[in-house]
Image 1 (spheres, rainbow, N blue to C red):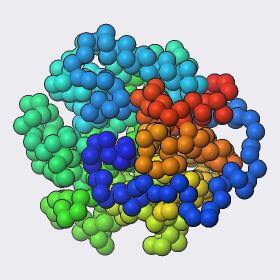
Image 2 (image 1 turned 30 degrees about the horizontal axis):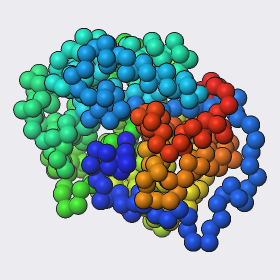
Image 3 (image 1 turned 60 degrees about the horizontal axis):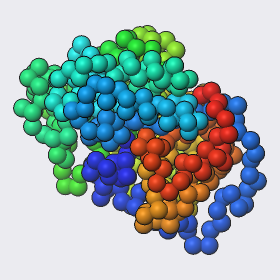
Length: 419
C-alpha cells in the first residue's frame, strides 16, 4: 500500500511522495469546508463496504512480531476480526502474500518470514484458511491481499530459501531502491505470479482478490529500474519504454481478471492504487491535483483504463489527504473518482488514512477527531461511492485520537452487509 504513512512505515519512496502526501495546512486559505456548503445527508446506506486493511509485511499489523506460537498468532488474528465486528465493519483485507511468500501452505512459494521469523518455516497452522472461516463466521468478507512483484525488502537473493523461485530463476529479478522485485516485463514472471496467487484462490473461498499500489516500484531519484534486456526482447513494437511498461501492467491485470473468473467465479477483483492517476495539468482527463507523482506516469499503472475497461470489480483509491489539502484535496479527488467509475459497474470504495489520525500529528486536520467523519459525510454525497476502507488494523484497535470511534458513532449506527 502507499506508505508515507502507509509507505512511510516501510520507508519506501517517502521523499518522492512529499509533495502529494506531505503535511499541508488543514485547509487552503479562505476555503469553506464542503460540509459547510452542502446539505448533510442523513441516515446510513442499507449496504456499503466498511473494511480495514491488515498488513502483515514487517509485522505492521499482524502478527505483532515474528516467532509467536501458532496459538498466539491465531488469537491475535481473531482479536482483529472481533474488533472489526465491534466497529461495525463488514470486511477485512488481509495481506497474505507480502513478499513473494505465503500465509497458507502454498504449492509454489515458501511460508512467509513474517510468521516465524524465518522464511520457509511452517508456522504450525493455516492462517489464510483460518482467516476465511473465522471471518465468515463473524459475517465479515475476507479479501485476500497479494503483492504481485515484491520479492524481498532487501537485495540479497541468498537470504531467500534455497528453493525460492527467485533463486531458481535469478534472471527474473531486479534489485532496485534497496529491495528485490520480479521483473514485470517478463511473460514468464507474469504467468508465475498469477499461478502463485491463484493457488490461494483455488484453495479458499475468498470474497475478493485485492492488490494495492505496488506494480512497478515507486521511483527512486537517480536510479534506473534495470529492465534493459527485457525491453530489448519484448518492447520493440512500442513507442516508448513507458508504453511498454504500462502494457505489461495492463496485461497482468487483464489476465488475472480473466483467470480469477475461471478459477473461482463470483470472487471479486479489487485494486487499491495511489489515488492520483494523472494531474489535469498534464492530461485534461486527470484530477484537479498537483501531486508529485501519478500512477500512470510513475508506476506504469493505468488505473483509469482498468475501470473503464471493467477489468476489475472495485477500485479503492488511497485518498490519504485531508479536505483542503493544497495539492491533493480529498474534496477534489473523491468526485474525480466518482466520475471515473460512473456507468462502468465498477464499485468505488475510498481508502481512508486512519493511520494519520493522531493527536500528535503535525497537521491540524489530522489532530481533529472529526476529520474522517467529514470524509464519510462528504463521500456519501456521491452515489458512486459504495463504502470505505481504513488503514490500518492497529489504528482501528488503538484509535489514537478517537477518529474511528467518531466515524462509528456518526455513520455506522448498525452493521450492514457489504455492497
